[in-house]
Amino acid sequence: MNDLKYQRILLKLGGESLAGEGGFGINPRRAEEAAQKVIEVVNMGVQVALVIGGGNMWRGKEDGLDHGMERVTADHMGMLATVMNALALQDALERAGLPTRVMTGIEVRAVAEPYIQRRAVRHLEKGRVVIFGAGTGNPYFTTDTAASLRAMEIDADVLVKATKVDAVYDKDPKTNPDAKRFEWLSYIDALNMRVGVMDSTAIAMCMDNDLPIRVVDLWQEGVLAKVVRGEGIGTHISA
Picture 1 (cartoon, helix red, strand yellow):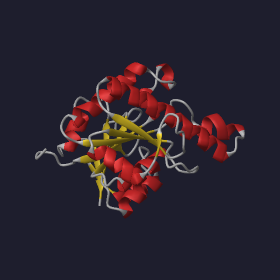
Picture 2 (spheres, helix red, strand yellow):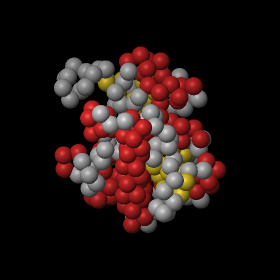
Picture 3 (tube, one colour):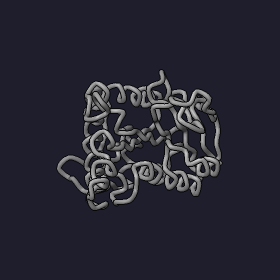
Picture 4 (cartoon, one colour):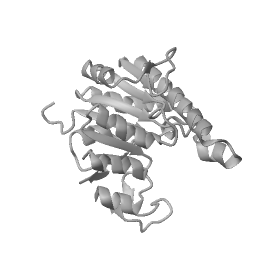
């Protein structure tokens, strides 16, 4: 572990990382692929916690708010979607032999533990992967913000935001070949640019607590191993 820059990480995954065809639903094979990424760094001695979104199951704005649904109801449905994704990821990790715990911000005791900060830390210290579902447990907060909050509560060394792009760009690189890639950004720069990979509340929370953020493409070979070793991959956002 002496060659590791980060000993404990919070990995934020979008629900799309588990999605099936068309970006919807849960594809067990995709869950297994994501699980292998986590297993690689756990085997290096890193403590890993995860927050996963629910965009593959429910998009509050498009599926609810745009049709007149009340915001709190839409957000609670989104929280339940993240619990389904957390259970799918837990299943993939457990089948690969890795002990896990799902902890949720709203109580669903039949399938997961309620979130308790000290218990979450203890699970990590015992070598278990902890998956946080149901966001913060409150409406109006995104899973990005939940990731920032949980990362600080468990005293993570870094928040790793896994996306479908390899870094932060000043515009969409898929539609703009001249998009500028950033290897490093200050928190203020990221906020002013309103970078699309993470919402401003989450970035501001990290800035206030000096928690570094690393934006990477989850599907690159060995990406998480490179992050925990401190190699220059993706975009680093810090003070």
